[in-house]
Image (cartoon, rainbow, N blue to C red; front, side):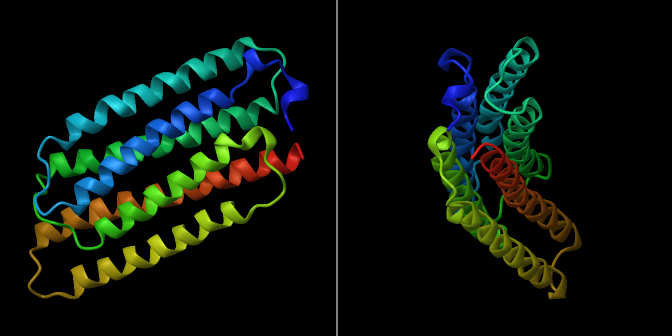
Length: 206
């Protein structure tokens, strides 16, 4: 639907796809990490280069945005979508920063399920972004991401309840686990805010 507005060489869709592909790789690493019986101690070193690469793609896109007079849709929406995608990668890195900083080595209850939900959200986002130029008015896939966010929120609350209702829980471990779960919940929430931006773009340009 956007092709009539801008020549292909000025398109931002490749940038969106590049960023979400990097985020997908980060989300998959997170799932593998939280699914393992013993956490990988060098996880931060695995994730950081990907987050940096996502930043670089976003920076290039924003520089192009500042130099381009005609854009395929509102430049504010382009900037917002770039920022939201970058935010997801930032949070996925923040999760592993906490794992590394707090020296978390034992499995965090609820983390695997939440990481899997974020990965599912990212896969749907990638599918939508891949088809974005010709996307219609069927927003059912967008709604799936919102439902997954609600599921992540429920898992998060239940996991916290288990942590703080267990009298045998070590206080320091409780704080560490809460921080990790909180960041995973933020990642799921950020995927939902990305959906809001995409839906706004599609509605404006349908």
